[in-house]
Image (cartoon, rainbow, N blue to C red):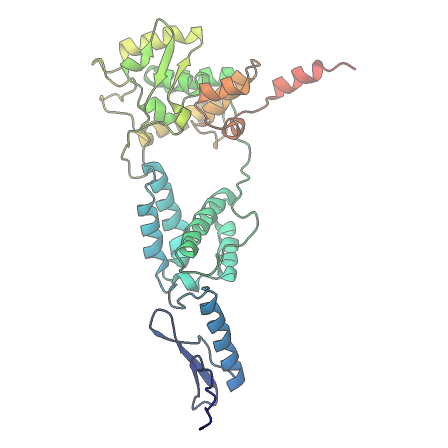
Length: 364
């Protein structure tokens, strides 16, 4: 009876010696395509060891196409933004971060060319050129895009691994006193006076003020119904939609001293149609951020407020005043249209006057 020859286990992949004397490893992947190691090896044994590791990855279903990450970062990032179904203001913000901070460095690279060292170098250079808050926002966006690439099996791991790099630690925003708010309102002139007062004493966002209409006003209750917002994008286009947060649709009750101001503004400056806008420019068009900004900067200087005091900071003032009444956190969240306690606490400040009252109330 003839003896059966023992069959050798079929070797995985092939190795060959190159004219340079180094060894190359190649194999047929699960995708039916032939792949080669990204580098050559000193010895045949080293090349075979590399093939054994690849074979183990395939058997454990851990194999990934080594060429999968050869996708241009700019194209992938722009598609990432487009496919997320984001709000127009978020798209506008991401486009700015990409254009100014990410694409100049990573735009020409493939996804698999972005490494942890290159991310660290980029961040260090950005911190020298711009504010830490902007760098943190840019880092979070980069990390989110590359994490999706990991989820898409285009990258093995996310190269954004800097602990704490996405946290924002911005300086506390300045607040205005009640006297300064009224001085600002006076300096802005009769047409924009109420906008300043509502920004402070009603804690309204600029985009909410832009979409206030006659039907929003209840003079009997001295209140405003917030149902929509119209943020202005960097290209000047306004996008009308729901307020910023889920809690943004709300009724805001105003202090009694604002009733004459509200009544006078509706009579003198609001559009006459039942659904007319509350705030329009001298020529009857919706107010523009650029035009309003020029008036704001002049008024701010006249009142003596710092150059970094933004219109949005009036909201900080209003939230602080409301908190000083002893209101519950939930009531403050409803008034400000905040969905989370953390968001409300960001805008809540402790004034020197309030700190003094606390100190005087401590028994010694």
